[in-house]
Length: 86
Image (cartoon, rainbow, N blue to C red; front, side, top):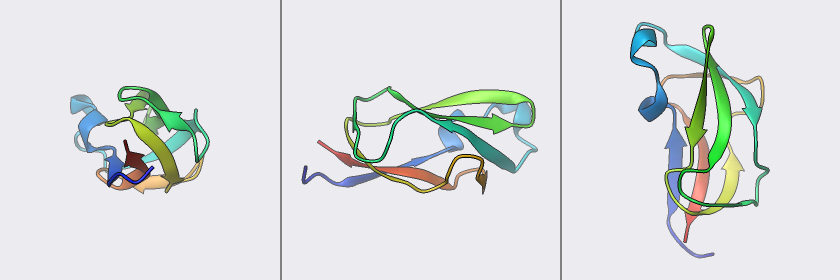
């Protein structure tokens, strides 16, 4: 694929009731690097305090990089993954 890279971040899925929380953990990755994804496919699950949130793919393409590893901590808005769009 030769499309543009799309960055996946946590800002769009951060729960309103956790707006004062700045850090979270990637609990599970559901797809490996190199996997084909469709827009809306669940890429990973993040844990924000005691809330689990699924992170959907914002575009169809190839998951080229999982930036934050499983059990890795990140801050709200950090890039979690990169997709090469179709």
